[in-house]
Length: 294
Image 1 (cartoon, one colour):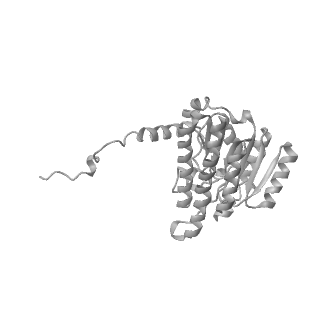
Image 2 (cartoon, one colour):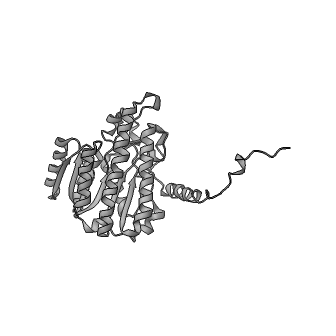
């Protein structure tokens, strides 16, 4: 879902440090039920629809483009014989978002939420339109937050459920693309980790997926065709989703498909958690104190 020429080796890791904890969380796949996938009319979302239907889930597919959404639904029905409901909605519009929230709160068959809808940008701050950046925040931050807040209490009440949040490697490499896009995906990663901390013991599985450069129309929307990127760094969307689901099955909290060495993420995450324990001091660090007068 993102990447840049500076990051061929920056991404995807398995969250081996959290895999043991995840074994205690009920597997939503085992219960099947209905999966809600946003941004399902093409690319990563459409592939999630196919893969989850193949695993036995009925689907509720959400996207703005109703025609393309119905085409995906028809393909999935023919291929897997699952029930598919289409919800045409623009998650950047509050009324449309509220309709999807209501579905998540009230449909007891739902066991999986895939927060995939989003868009990015490649322009630097001084060349970016503030209104477009606000729209990006609406889709990339506000929508998954509100959908998660709708789904999570229902999942907790039923004793299980899975929330998959599609972030990006720019959640870590925030300098790679547009700054607002990087910040929005850093938010998704932080939200996912916090949700895991709060909800794992309540039977809720939460996963953040951090794709690198992936061959979808995301890049056209962002303003840079993926064909212009080095072929060795652009992953097929099918491979990305299959890797993400393998990470989910393995119990990962953070899955980064292009990261070749899982130890890179394990070390990074261990260092982050250790650093977070070093902030509890009532006085500033010595480097910020005025030197004593001679």
